[in-house]
Image 1 (cartoon, protein in one colour):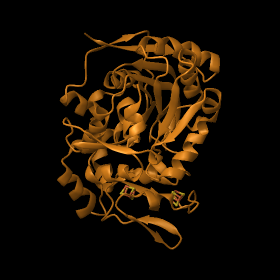
Image 2: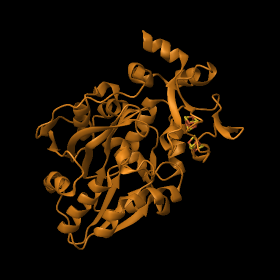
Image 3: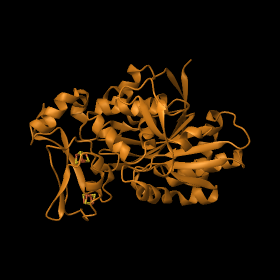
Length: 376
Ligand code: SF4
Ligand code: SF4
């Protein structure tokens, strides 16, 4: 039977409008729970950011979700959890502080995943990781509520419900994942390993204002006006891609999900009119993401200075906070004078530095080789 994806119009983050759109979807998706359930909310909090930058799931959106569960289950333990990027506990604490309204009003317990006990979950379906390190609080929850944001992504073209689970992997282990799986195709396979290891019952996407272009942090906010929900994250992403007019075949997580037979038939309940999103700048050569690892490494390092798609620093925006240097999973960033610089021979083009720079001082561009390909 086809999985349902529920769609509601919602044009702003006004509390009343959000409640009106979110409550009916959650009513349909939430399974019957006991009187004191453990409910874990997992927004997309890529890094500390202002709500109007459209980098994170909007705090008002999370507030509305928390309100629904607090009203339905007054005695529930409701957690809000995340591991924000690879910079560790202080960074995640700062990021979660942006949700103070929901935390205060609905008595949420804040659980930065870096501060939690970690369990290694056996994952027989895994292709890259046969064991996935995950916080126990996530595994012990009666219900996990996934709250992704609709955004484009310079590495994986799109980020939604499936990719949001990579944020469950605590801190620096995420960086190891990038180093283990360099190409977008292999990295997407790793993301699916994590997705399959988490038991999540409810997926609800903030597509009121999404992000287009060079997401997930350097793109532009995109007024979209929708909220989508489903019990199946892959089906939800398929519907979100239809909304953003991005072909699923360009999105390696969807391609991998299809190869694992996780992409079910789905039907949209409600009206959905596409709002086309601008692709990240890798659009025309997104297919290169499907090249084998060895070839990408060759293009990325041996042909230096012709790497595949690399970060570069905009000195006029750089505040020299050096977060990028700390975050790089392979130690490819060094200081040249006072400014950071990339050692192209070490760089694996994971673009974590560009995602996490708080000042938008790291942009990405295709190499000469790729720009030539783009002109074809
Ligand atoms: S590029 Fe960004 S993260 Fe790196 S030092 Fe400059 S401001 Fe900080
Ligand atoms: S320099 Fe940036 S893109 Fe290159 S490996 Fe380090 S974090 Fe990834």
